[in-house]
Length: 195
Image (cartoon, rainbow, N blue to C red; front, side, top):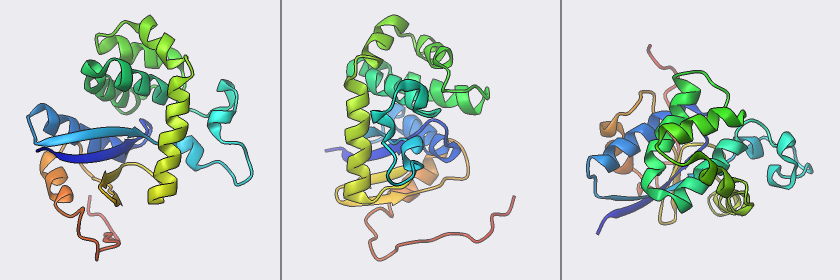
C-alpha cells in the first residue's frame, strides 16, 4: 500500500518549487507514494486580522497567487492526468521565466504547455468550484494543522513545514519523509547556510 502524504503549494514560493519538483520526479519515477497536492494561498496567509478572506473578495482584490491556484485546482480535480505537467510548468513560469502568475495569460500559457484545452480548463477554473475548494482546503490546513506556509508536508495527523535549499532533490525528499513521524523534534534550523 503506498504511503499517503499531502503537500501544500503556492506557485510563488521558491521553496515550494524545490520540494514539488522532487515530489513530481519521485512520483514519475514510481515512488510508492500517494500524494495529495493542496493549494495554500500565501495571499490569504498575509491578510490582516479582521479583513475579509481573499476568496470573499472580487478577483481584482485577490492578490497575485489566487488565479494560478484556481487553475491548478481545476486541473487537479477535473484533468488529473495532466496535473503534474501543469504543476511543473506553473512553477517554471514563475521561477525560470520570471513571469507574473497574477496575469491570467501567463497561467493560460502554462495550461497550454501541459497539453490541455485552455478554454475547458478556464471554464472550470472560473466556475466557482475551485474557489470554494481553495477556501476549504486552505482553511483546513490552518485550522487542523496550524499551517502557515508552503511547502507543508502532511501525513496522518502530522504536518511539517520544510524548506529544501536545492531543486528537485529526491534524496532530500526521501530523507525528510523519513523524519515526518519524529514528533519529539519540533524545529531544526541552520542559523547560517553556506553558499
